[in-house]
Amino acid sequence: MKAKTKNTPGLQPRRVLLVDDEASFTRMVKLNLEASGKYAVRVVNESPMAQQAANEFKPEIILLDIVMPEADGGDVAVQLRQHANTQDTPIIFVSAMVSRKESGSGFYESGGEHFLAKPVSTERLSSSIDSVLAKCV
Image (tube, rainbow, N blue to C red; front, side, top):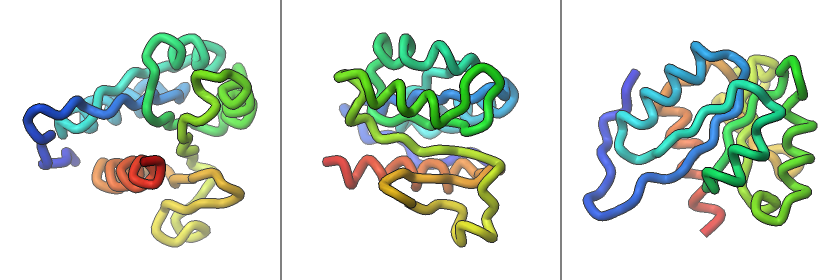
């Protein structure tokens, strides 16, 4: 489902780095978020490339899968937190390991980290991104 809200003229889209090994998922998320006009999305399908992509793209927020073959999301998050340019960048872990039943609305915070259950609608993803970014201002 595509979000219908367009970006306010003159405002730059929010930069979102999406790290997930499922190419079909990342393609769908990128298309739908960018269609809203509110986000510019960079996709990384190989977790070891996350830090390099973050250094180049300078995301305002990172969407990070937990279970990936080369390095899991927890390891990637630790690496991101060790670099000055990404240590304060908010991360939302997006995972099928977290069920909507466990998390209530499908989005929750635990131990200072944010989690979102897959599958996720574009509206839920967008509202979660906006909610986390609003707390960082």
